Length: 223
Image (tube, rainbow, N blue to C red; front, top):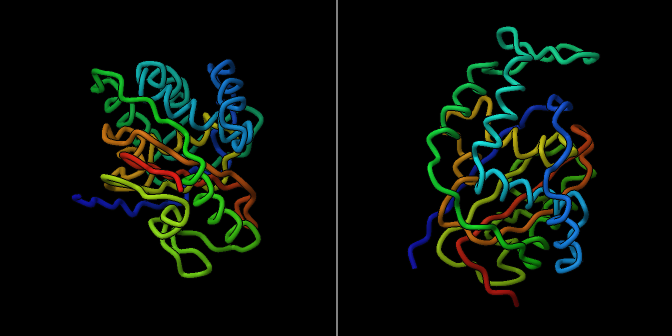
């Protein structure tokens, strides 16, 4: 088995995507809550939004086009909100739009995994009462070790962590734009065609208020 590990992290868009908070997948979310009761509403929405982006990137072109119009230089001007500075500004959004337009076919649907969600939850529980960020847990664990506690991953795996957003669309938009991340590692995970399963856990963070941990893998065998 050839292992390909993606160590990806950046503090993403702290509370700046507030105009984009709804999902188009309410039925799918309700169905996932029924079939996967270990997911909260937000966690189910994150997986639905990831699948929306993977299956219909043109839809996200619409979202990001609207969002790009709120920038003046690197400053985000949302009506009724304070002006917030980003690292790359509108350029990163336009680059993300270009990438989405190049996506010709829908990618495989991500299937929720309870074991991987437990691994993600371990990380949330370790960080939610601290000011710490990053992929190394308070117990010294890596994300590979955390998801391996509850099953066996196969092929390749990755972890994304988003800080500061509390809606699925805001989280997924931030991962796709990937402001300030030169290799667009978060986006690569979202659109990795090898990934077929995902675990999600969302919670609080002492500094950024919210955090969401997403685990991906090509395959996963639950314990």
